[in-house]
Image (cartoon, rainbow, N blue to C red):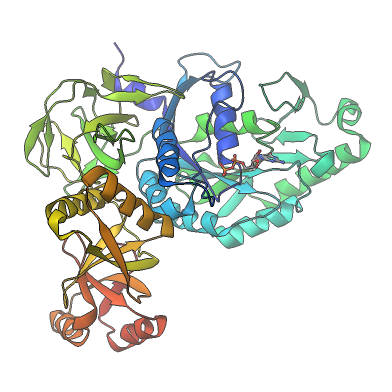
Length: 532
Ligand code: GDP
């Protein structure tokens, strides 16, 4: 029988994140090749939602469907030459499209570490910066993969400087590129102190040869000039960067960096082998009541993502539950804490690269898909009876705002229900203005509004209408000074709202108004995420 401690130790639950087009899908696919989950490249669909002039909403639905099936990918992996039980790797997929960034942020609450893919020709891009911010907030250890080294890019040392500066984290290269662009020959594995030369192959995992970097053999493989450069660079790396420590990585103080080309399969195995060795196994999860250790014998878990079924005939959803402690067992009675209700799941699913199957048991770090006919809300906790509340997942101040109105008075019930359900799923955020009682929907991108409208119509038989509202930011406010808080709310009564949890939110209509408010009310804290 599998012991829980053992199962925990071998699990690696993480997300691969990147600015769109940096190579996340390609890298994921190469990992799956190494994991033996797929045989040839091209098997993993990109879950990017492409909006073209001709695409209709069915397209988006189909594309969203793709992201359902690839939401979690799990496989067993044991690096060559190692003995014992394989690692169990759980990759949590995140939507490629920026408009669904909130989804990605929430997924990051369910992982124990992350791999950030950066396009080496482009350097740190907007979305990379934001994702790193979320990782920093949660102390998530990150490894950075500098991809596309087969393109003419920038000097590796410059790139490392940029990472440190832009992402505000110390870095430590654990592999090093040999040449670049057309002359890119592969990477030296600093972590294992060995050079593996791969033949480029976009389709399969290829043969490799081990070479001693101080031997002349290196010169024959990569050329005299490149060999010399590599030896010099490595000397410099050791001089500039402190020795790598696994602890500083796990404490999220240092990000190990790997160079490579996902497309050509250069540097990917180095990354994967090091990752399984150093990445943390499931970590403790903070609940309001206490810290939950993965080794606690009783099952606990929380819902971090809900995805609607794309089949319009079955309006069921899948709720993704991260197992935090104990063992999840099919058909066992669990407590749905928010509803104070006992629930059982007869067909929980686990996910393989291209299929899902029923799962009988799952361990901390695993993700189980639970059929959901409207009983779950993001952030819900399941336990064996304890009244436990995992800390709410953060909401971020949205960037776009619109009033939403019911466009069919005969369907107001459906409209109400639809909105409520979609907000529970975390499709967008809703604020109710306390002055005029109107609902304001806040999103990160335009697509979210369109998805809401489409889904209201197709799943709830309701119609909505958008009306403009001019807002700059929504921020959650709090203060120890009750009188000042009261005074603020009175002064700004037209701009005060409640989020769906009933928390006070200030809707600032310009950055000027916001900074004036911050200046005038020094005892009030203005938060740009809901978790404080
Ligand atoms: P994602 O949006 O981050 O998932 O990026 P994709 O994996 O879809 O990659 C975006 C584009 O970059 C695709 O056309 C890939 O073929 C290409 N790409 C990925 N990795 C590499 C690489 O190592 N070198 C080059 N030249 N192109 C790459």
